[in-house]
Image (cartoon, rainbow, N blue to C red; front, side, top):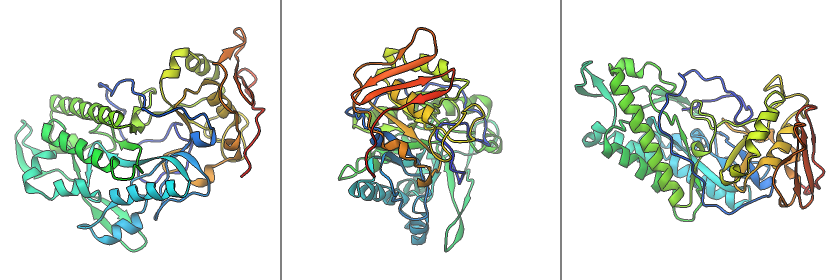
Length: 388
C-alpha cells in the first residue's frame, strides 16, 4: 500500500522500501474495450490523494483515486462503519458529474485486506473466514489459527488510530474468489461511475512487508505458491474487468517493477523508446505514460518550470495508441497540471515515422505534425490550444 509520497511524475522511478517484484505470470496483453479518444486533454491521468473528496481545478481523462482519498470523512464513521470503497465510488460519480474526469478508477490491494474497506472488513471480522488470510505457522506448514496482522496508523484531522491489515491467502480458492467478487461489485455499481481499479501490491508478499513471510515462518516453497496464486488472482480479476468494460492500472503493459506500470522517456532513452513504441503492432496495446517532471531525471533536459516536459508530450502524441493516457500518479496533485495538455492535435492521419536513422520522429495529425528530435532533445508541437 502506497502511503504519502511527494507528487512526482507518474511512471518515473519511485523510491520503494520493499523488495523487487518476484517473477511470475502476469494477466497477459489486455486492452480495455473502450472507444478511441484522441483528445489530449481527455488523455491525461492523475493518481491523487486528498483528505476529503478529490475535485480538481482541471479536467483529466483518467483519475485514479488513492486509498486515502476522503480519509477524514470515511474514518470519522468509526472502524465498524468506515466506508472507503463507497466513498471512492461516490467521488467518481462527483468527478464525472462535474466534468472533471472522463474515466475514474478506485483503489484495492491484492496483498492486503484493509479494515477500512467495507467488503474486506466483512470477511476480516467473520470467524468462519479466518482461513481467507495468512496465519502464523509452526514452520512446517501447520497454522495455529492466529491471523497475521500488521496494523497501520492512519492520521486524520480528528484522530490517529491503528487499523488492521491482514494478508490475503490467495492459495485458498475461496479467498481468491471472495476478493475478485468484492472488487467487481465495487466497480459495477449502479450508474457506471467507476471504470476500473488500481490494484496495489499486485505481486503480493513481500511487497512493502518484507518481514511478513519470516514472521509467519513460511517456507520458500510456500511463499512461491502464494506468489503464483496471487498472480493468478490478478489475472482472473483483469479478465473479469475487461469482460465488464472496465480496466486495471496494473494491466497497462510495461517493464515489470514493483506494481507500477512505469513507462517514460528521457534524453538518454529517447531513440530506443521511440523505435520500440513506433512499431505498428503497439497500436493494439494501451499506453500509460509519464508526462515528465523537471529534475526527476538528469537526462530529461530542459522542461517547463513546473508540469510536463514537451519532449514527453511530443513522444506521447507520436507513438500513442487509441487508448492512452499521459500524466502523473502516486499521490500527485492538481498542481502538476500544465496547459500543454490543452493542445488540440485533432486525430492522427498516419503512424509514427523516423527520418531514416536520424532519431527524428514525426506523426501527422489533422491539426499539424508532431515532431521529436531525440539527438537534439527538441520537440515541435504546432497545435492550437483549447481556451481554458
